[in-house]
Length: 86
Image 1 (cartoon, helix red, strand yellow):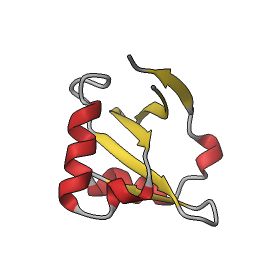
Image 2 (tube, rainbow, N blue to C red; image 1 turned 90 degrees about the vertical axis):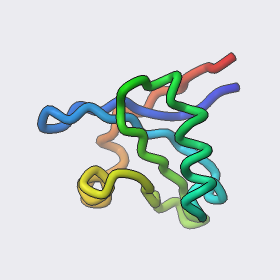
Image 3 (spheres, rainbow, N blue to C red; image 1 turned 90 degrees about the horizontal axis):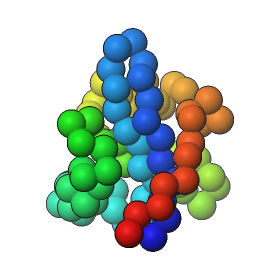
């Protein structure tokens, strides 16, 4: 399986972002399941889930201070990377 994500170090806070389907961010329970499934890839880091709307705009779900920061950040500035997970 492949996923798109990023590890970001901003103002001394290290966190990860994982792009997921919109359905993974629609409820707290589905978001928590998604976050738990990625925890082994990003141990000890807050995981922010990112989903794209049909228009291509990102919606973030996770720790509020990080979500606020990301909502003001151009997604092209995020160091996206493709991860392969077995």
